[in-house]
Image 1: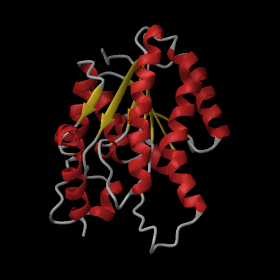
Image 2: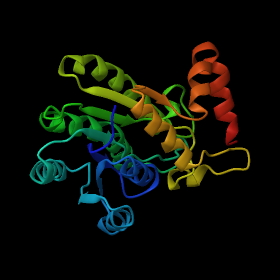
Image 3: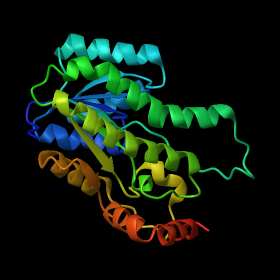
Image 4: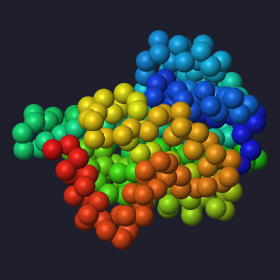
Length: 248
């Protein structure tokens, strides 16, 4: 798909993968809107890359409707919705003190929010001549990482949702992309940094994503996620054990 002059909304655009997406996509000539909970960091990214921003906590229904209203008022349509906002928590269920709100929050941000936002923005997307939705899942959608049971489960769910919505939206000519990052050098990976784990530089990972968008590659497995996809099909138990042993 062509990116020049596209109006693109990126949730979780104030840091990490989302901020790098804003940088690289704006260089392609797209008009970028970033959203996130922290207005200070949003403003910082917006000022640095010359993009627009709207504060939004994607877990709050009122914020989602306000985000929709602001995009509609400012732009009148939306070409690309990038559902990037997400969190990853490491849990040992038999040892850690875990609250119901911990579990609900991770599921809410990683699954319910992108699905409800996608539904809410459909009317604006349909005003575009080349609309698209992007779901940022993970290489862990192919095989779970035992230390992050909720995160792994939410990304598997989004992988299947992306496939299903891609089929459903064909009649509306809405493209559905899925980005499956490998372990990437962002703050999300801070609790998992070990000498044995090679994190992919975020700029290289996002560059693969941008190229995938331009080539209409609907399932973009970046970096080592390509290998995870292949191995998960031929030796899933082997891959699972490798992941389980990585952080022993």
